[in-house]
Picture 1 (cartoon, rainbow, N blue to C red):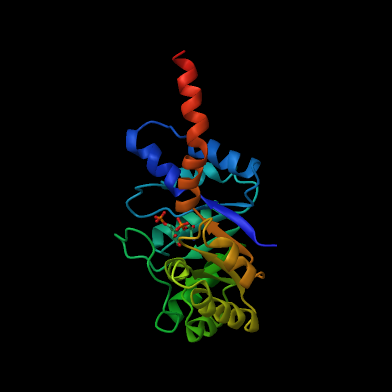
Picture 2: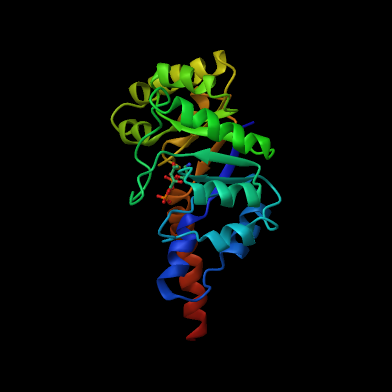
Length: 237
Ligand SMILES: CC(=O)[C@@H](O)[C@H](O)COP(=O)(O)O
Ligand SMILES: NCC(=O)COP(=O)(O)O
């Protein structure tokens, strides 16, 4: 079964817009799990523009499913993750000022660094996943770091899906097969949505987890908009 981990970054973006505590990130995490999410993902960025380091500590006791913390393994990030001890950490090669994640690791160029960081997290009992594109050499080299899993960076799949689902998914199926051959678990994420998720899952049913944020939170707004407007109209009768 492929688990759904809900990325709640965008809830924090909305909260931060006004400086108060609405929407409440902790309540949203609790409710996501109540409504069936099998994990909660956060990606604290250095500028704390959405999830803050303090949120990550506060979320730890709230997340009773699987807590997945994503980010670039800077000394501050490593310290945070080792203290919070999530079930999983996903290593992402983001630049300090990245708008969002836009590439996977070059696991050949960064082999020694990744191996060291993977070992450090695993020594704290934390499963490690490496964010990666579909290049088979990168995946084979990821296995040499002794990471537990990889997370396939699915933005190219999402972009190309609308042109040709078959062609879009093909490199991802090949990549997931290589990962399976070398003993790595497969996660996937970035720009997955109601439009493209089911096709990816049909083609790679052995994915362990997908983490979805942006589209899922947008859909939650749209799917809830009618009921919400009705509720407000009733206040004005
Ligand atoms: C690692 C990854 O795939 C990203 O999708 C990330 O978690 C999203 O980050 P932002 O919410 O900051 O765009
Ligand atoms: N790891 C991917 C993730 O957590 C969410 O990405 P997105 O759905 O916000 O693009």
